[in-house]
Amino acid sequence: MALANSINGAVRRVPAWPLYLLGAGWMGWQFWLALTGQGKYGVEPINVLEREYGLDALILLVAGLAVTPLRTWAGVNLIKFRRAIGLLAFFFVLAHFLVFALLDVQTLGRVVTEVVKRPYVTVGFIAFLALIPLALTSNNWSIRRMGPVRWRRLHKLVYPAALLGALHFIWLVKGWPLEPFLYMGGLILLLALRLKWSRIREIATTRRGGARTS
Ligand code: HEM
Image 1 (cartoon, rainbow, N blue to C red):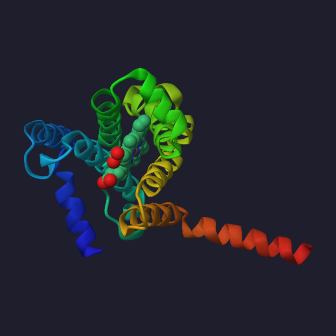
Image 2 (cartoon, protein in one colour; image 1 turned 90 degrees about the vertical axis):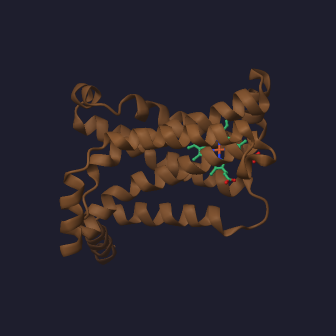
């Protein structure tokens, strides 16, 4: 707990806004490298940029979902960064989609065909759609207007969205590389950790009670 306390103490002094700058800077830097064909962008820069933004989005989704379990299980409180992480995840998905639509396939007709014909694109698109209301309501005004209960209920959409994002990755790779499965495994673990012990015990007790009476 001493480590958690010193992390929390340090975090209290760090504002969340530099995260937006870091995210925008990283996104712009990757775009610039792709534009100038440097490093890994030497061959097929559009495809590499599309993949870079997709992967960044998935990493941010996982990071955002790790915030609550980190607090519950390790006492590390990074809640003040959660909104920035979530919004950045959305902006990376948006950038991923825009690179796909505007630079890769380039016409609206082909975007529609790809979304309809390729199941892995369909799954990614559904995840993207699910994140839109979350991004639009990630502000204090929406929380006040909707009330915390409705707001929290809506924001549970991030769970299926992240799982669909990971499924999209598994689906699009060829063969059985470990990486996409690690993301899916990590997400499942994080979602399982959100179930508090009390809730797990409650479910177990109800089951046992049910088994005795039947
Ligand atoms: C939550 C939403 C999404 C997430 C988390 C996501 C994530 C990813 C990831 C991790 C990759 C592979 C990166 C790599 O190989 O290193 C990828 C590739 C791809 N994604 Fe997405 N994606 C999402 C939404 C979308 C949407 C909305 C579209 C288009 C409608 C899309 C189209 C693609 C395509 C076409 C590729 C493969 C690029 C290629 O190699 O040809 N994705 N995505």
